[in-house]
Length: 393
Image 1 (spheres, rainbow, N blue to C red):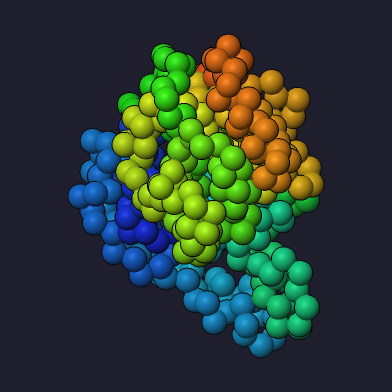
Image 2 (spheres, rainbow, N blue to C red):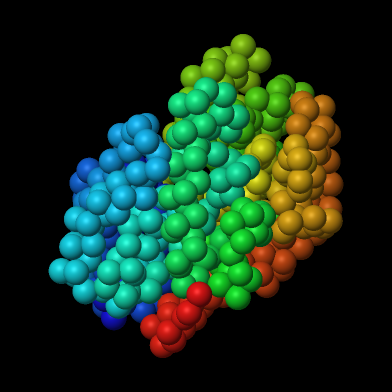
């Protein structure tokens, strides 16, 4: 089977951070030939990308977006301009002759897939990794000027066209569903398919005994919505605890300075990037996972910790709770304050029985719902359906 994967991401950046799981772009090695088309000018290392497709033959292509279009005059011409932009991408697909297309996110890439389907009849699915209405990426959260409103209207049209013609839309967690409901996507085309995580290196935590030093780990990008400031402040009163922060971002320098100001820099280690294989092997060696996130998501780092069986401390986010975590007894919830984090972290340190019970509940629940083999099978089933059925929308 020949699979075309169209992505908006700069894959070199993901490689640098070491975040790719094996077979990420070829679940179940269902395809024997994978073409990755990037809607940018990135030139990732092909050899390094091979792990994302397994034994399949890998081909890399580029077809950059035209970022002048969202600001172009006469919005009535947007449809024509986008169709004109997509022509070259359709010709690339014509040469590839894919059996199906997978898009990661509903961006320019998914609009291009809709044009390929229109011109060549190739079915496509879209995996959605955020809720764009809650965690804005391409759009302004609160557009003020006519230019910002124009920009948002352009992307609203582009996204809607992409979503409307997809065979299936695959949100990677339930928080995305409200976005699809707003776009009036029929339920029979929506399948929640969780991220496929590192099946080769995620191992069960077997020993919950803690040594003289208690090891916490926090994984995530360092920016406002995932700011671990209050976790650092909680560490001040936990002299026998060590914290490893894995991740990079615009807040990193400030957080490193804060650790110095709090006189805890000798107990806080910042690791901007760790290869995903190494991170997964590292998790069972930690004593607990602690995190702050306001994102409306069930992110990969949290899933990895749960699948390992790490006791997990997480804040109650502002706004709606993540559906998968409603009334969850397999995580320890806190408020995003130093006092709440400190109290929960202190209890995790001191209560060996409760710590082990929490970790084992996490492992049991996670393996039942989000095991890599279960997640992989869900994607493979969707691909097989797309290849065998003619969907009419």
